[in-house]
Image (cartoon, rainbow, N blue to C red; front, side, top):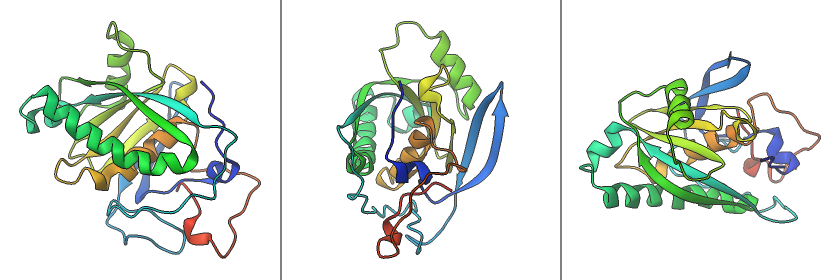
Length: 216
């Protein structure tokens, strides 16, 4: 699946994330982001996990793009919700509702195909990729993202959506699901092809600089 994002989106996307690691794994670029306690928004339009929602309404597409997302939750998330399937699903739908507040502005439509448990705590990106590749009868999806309990950050393969490495991990705090939507969307953007070094022939006007979509 190839998703052509708006040019100015290709320039960058920002969450309150600091790049703590940017490395290659078997020829694939892996980006590891760490959430920092930053102000809600700075002059560059930096998103924080405070829940600030920027205005990206100027982004235009010829038609919406649909992305099918398989959500997985680690043992910590499952335990928090008493291993009750309906409670877990309700929490994930709350999270995805917040994520869609970002995606809809860019004409990206996210569809959750299922929510599945993954055994273990502190699951690594490589372990999650192995789970995806070896688990039978998974529903058809474009990307798979693991929701990791109390993980302050995220990690994903850049442009994984076009390859077998279409997986990422996003941190999640059950008491603040809306606040970590920006982290989820940040990792999703990596999977859709954005890196921290992406460039494009576009500029944000000085007037609207605070709403410019970046990834750092």
